[in-house]
Image (cartoon, rainbow, N blue to C red; front, top):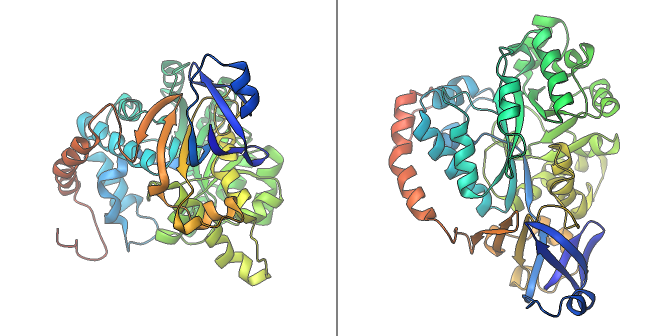
Length: 429
């Protein structure tokens, strides 16, 4: 019985939820639920909000050890930072990186993340194990640019309670036309998501123009590879025509505002995408696993890049960004019928957030306040599939601090082995 519950229709008082079998069994007026279940002892949560867990629509779980190595680097850092880093991982260190990233995500209020696929020379089961042990719901990709291994990956994780299989092609130019269309069709038939970076940087757009004569989204549309099962990552450099292609085909996008600030060429025009009916969620790109800072960045980036120039003082307002960070993010990942809302039949993936704090008192518009004022330290509990995964920032059933200590020992050795290329000297440790 929380003080307030964030329902699909908005924040409401006097509500309660009943959880059974890891799902929301009942949601409704507290008095009604108490009367119907007199044999149950209610849990009172005065001064707290119960809200859906955040959904990270774009992550790289095996990049956790080198995050700060990307600071101050040119936009296309995957060649100089991320590929060498991931290639330096083995089964053990890939697992540690994934579990560390999963713990950070949970601490930031994410109950679901979409991993875009690792280039590490390991079985992706290592990534799955790290996420599963931490208790994080994960859309787990396998990169299949060669056209091989897709069916096996989808079958391997079919019906897993927390791991949802996905296929990935890093960028369209990594695969032939035949592989792109065949993989897209395979995902559509299997009800899985195809994750692919599109129109992220000017260099990638120009490579596509030189190699196939079309921009990335144009190329995917031309060969019939777009559709509701496709999740295009970043999409910061879209023409109006490409936006129309995305809207007409039902293709989803991950809007990654922090990645734009840290190493991008542009900010995706998210409020335009919303106006045109393009489905999208918000993603971290592995930058920082903090859901409240992500929604703040999502709104702020739109205001600075587009709202100020057009005199738009709302830029979607608070509810829009919370929706895209929860329910609409789940929809973009093909999990709209699984998670993302406080609703009967969906997985009990939720946060218990303290709201009786100085920063949010008195409260006038909770949704705006959550976007602009809330902090990670207000998250009292994180629950995934009805199970408590974090209490006051740390897991109650395994040693999160020991994992952090282990990562502090192992991570620097992985980075040294990777031989990263930075445009400025590596800072002193």
